Image (cartoon, rainbow, N blue to C red; front, side, top):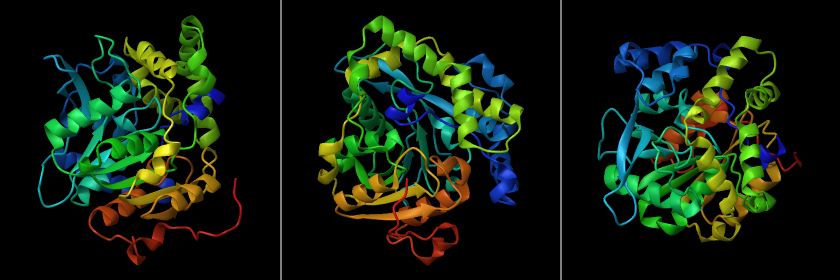
Length: 360
């Protein structure tokens, strides 16, 4: 468990739909019904275990998943890269590109994604190289530079316009690293409970390969991921948490997942501490009121080190507010994307009061 938290937390996939949102469930079903995803089949590249998932939003977003060819290196070779594409692309608004947490997938956005589309945004949910559902049969390197280059090539080939790049948890480090290297590709940043002060994978990078593979096997285990969900959510029925756990580890069932994760771990991982002050882009930092992974002090520190950033806090939310409070997060991102730089009073309904009191 400590290993997972060091890398940016295990992906906790789940939501109590009736707890906070009232009619949100109905609105989501309406969006997907219009999209026709309810009648579609699952993509053949997904593990067969996807058929057993009961979460309707995970099932719907899974059915919209595509693989796009992304060229890597100087050769003709491509990686068939998994993502959820927008139904329509438009030059009227900046594209919103959604990354995910450490060892997760674009399914992390299953509850927020339809709300962003409903708000009129061109939203892309992409899988970071080495995680998610891309075809890695050739076992490409999955270090930081490779992840960065892959994302750039995907952007250059398909998105082609400065984007609003959204990174939760370790995805915030992915976003900062990318922005520093390719500032022309990014218009704005949204960082959600950003895990940006870890010094890479630390001593894990020094492990013998055999030990690294054993550790990664544990990271994949159902008990560990089930426990992470138990810690994050209280009062949720056993079988519901079990279903969410299966969503969160679905990508781990692909044959190359272990090799890709070990490649990342032994490469040293993300260390963006020295890059933070180089970011000049307008940035929205979203933090969960009850986040137990990233300290509030680190959020405030990040805000002070970024030259053009604002903080907004989501009440009644933990480390993944886009999972347990998607309506609020979608509203914040939409306002920010559509030019409401201050994310002003229109979003106040879902913000907790920020205070100077120390928090854990």
